Length: 455
Ligand code: NAD
View 1 (cartoon, rainbow, N blue to C red):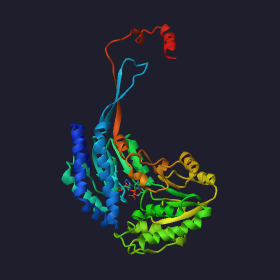
View 2: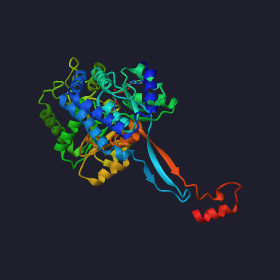
View 3: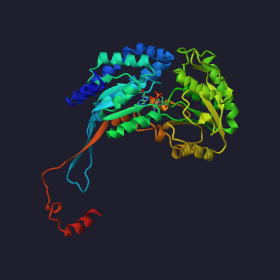
View 4: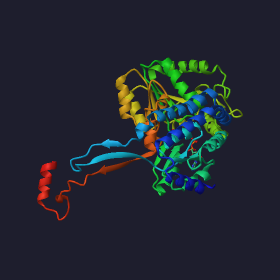
């Protein structure tokens, strides 16, 4: 089947009503859960073959997270699907009013390479829950995983319900020409703009899950040892190739040296100089990303680390001296390089952050609740943690998404169900009463009568 036929097939499948009722949605979620659980090893091996990701990291961030999400949906779906009864208003009295949660139809899910299972299947859970059919386009940069997704999904699901289309730019461009009912895109801000432009041509709604430079702020009163552990954990999983990895550290001047010392300790405890890919550290995904990172490294003042090896696509976790104007502070790093800059006045720091594009995440380490409230209130960012990194993603009660250049819309848990549903508002009226005053010919007296009643 060519792309147009795959799309048409899904449209027909949806129109036949094959996806809508609760039992079908539940069965499809269970089928997806079994598919993932039964093929955990195959999936993790595919990700390891693509970019040397350790099994534990693949299990915890690609497999477990999606299984957890499916269980959460199975537990709550019936309740989410129920039409919501809302009150009437004085203008529309008497009436009964309900909001029906309706599936959108056929949706397109485009994934990024860095969590190639998670970023395609996690949105798929929401698409199924909400009663849609879905075409998945995994990233061509993780080809083994893309191929595993295609073969395992096509063994379990009718392609009318879920189809995987593999390919790169040409394929995605062709997909973007189809009149989907929704496009859910995960990737860079650059490609996000291309996707949104294509969607605008056909007025297709989009959710864009993009990236950005997510800061970690270490205030003077923080427990520096714990900060260093949590920041470097968030930075070194997937070798920093994580959309919500702390991109840089802004540390209070008075604790800069302590943070650097603790960082050295932490990294030697984590890795003991054993960085072999697939063991406890991940490769840089390909030569072009390696060259991009090496170029940044070559222009930087290294405080600690800095070893790299193109043959193994290895880059050591590295602390870099930086200021706001440094080359490495211009774009998302997406690798294990960590610029560190200092501040002394939180107000100045807040101004600096507000001047920059809004990041996907922000992490603040402090015991000062006033500062916590100020940062949450005054700095725009998608979401984040206080005294932790990355873990806000793991709670399905929290919506996950960016703001401004880091994205639009959100998902996870109920928010995924909502992202792939639309609200249909229905008002139901009895045949009586049916007063004459609302119909022409109008009587001017009615205006004063209206004003008396409704003001
Ligand atoms: P990318 O934007 O290069 O690619 C993402 C997807 O878009 C891929 O499937 C790719 O095939 C497709 N694509 C690439 N160029 C295209 C084009 N010209 N036209 C149409 N489609 C095109 O991103 P990536 O390198 O796979 O992932 C890294 C980026 O994704 C980072 O910026 C990262 O922060 C972001 N990201 C965001 C999240 C999130 O949840 N917000 C998660 C992971 C990654």
